[in-house]
Image (cartoon, rainbow, N blue to C red; front, side, top):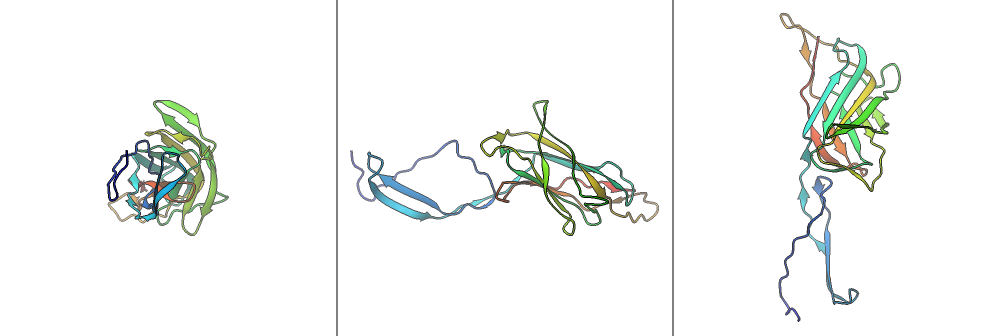
Length: 203
């Protein structure tokens, strides 16, 4: 049976994963005869769609010591709301006043993933740290062919972080920092999911 010229064919594809926010880039659609090789129609520039960057299900960032201007560790946690390829990254943006690479290069003390109460070590490492920008890019260092499941929680402890200098005005006894910014990033650098956990108070 042949479709007449000008006919409209609509279909819905399943098991398609959207990995990152922003413009998708153009799609390409072609039609072929039943032999699968004889091209009938071709549109190489179907308009792109804008994909919304998702939100992490949960997140936190907490210094090991809340003292003003002390060198400490920083425990960060992010929980993903969608599957994430194992070769992805976590980007941590420090608030104003916090320093990284303090007394030595910031490195990973421990890194684990947790899903359904099962804790698994993650072979993460620091891919890049930028002291002027206050950012640490953590590589999860897994296979691009496998993804972490929805709801996976990552816990990473960083060292050589210096807290901001607290400016306390009595009767207050602590100062709340600006928020941390945490996000998951794909191998190409595109943001997948983001969050801004509640900031800690520094006495």
